[in-house]
Every structure is written in structure tokens, then in C-alpha cells.
Amino acid sequence: MWNEDNNQLKRSFQFSNFIEAFGFMTKVALAAEKMNHHPTWSNSYNKVEIILYTHDAGDIATDKDRKLANEIDKIFSGGNTVFKG
Image (cartoon, rainbow, N blue to C red; front, side, top):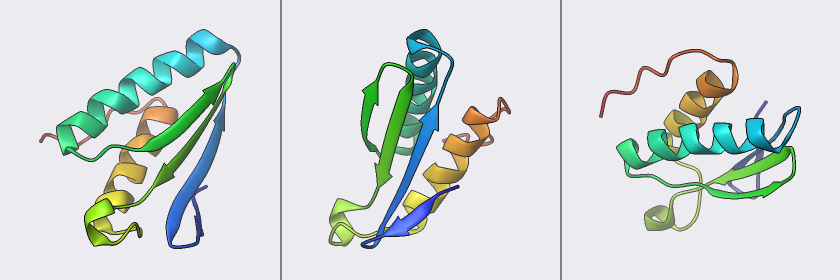
């Protein structure tokens, strides 16, 4: 579940291993690029931490961030994303 902290959306994801974590990040990167909205994130072995906020809005969470968070949740749950561009 996403947490809103300091006007930013944050969530941690854990996987079985590095390959699964990296695969997830690759899918998120493709969705983010399509949306032209890129996360701040980090990866350590099987853990991925993501922070979403919009620079143009003063580094706060906006609808763009909520839409990307929704897409990330779909990717994590193994569902197909609905974002078409």
C-alpha cells in the first residue's frame, strides 16, 4: 500500500531475488516512460523502494503520481497495465 508522507507517495516492494526485482523495475520503467513521469527509486537485492512526486508542482504528489502508482500496483500484482499513452 502506498503511504503519503511529506506530500510524496512512498512504497516498498519485496521479491524473491534480484532478478525478480530488476524485472519489476524494467516493467515500471517502461510504464513510466510512456507516461513521461519518472519515479525516484532505489534497489537493494530483492527490495525496491519507490517515491513519487511531481517536480513541476513543487515536489508534491499529484494526479500524475497517483496514476503511476496505480500502474505500478498492477505491474506488481501481475496484471496488465491499462495505460495506453
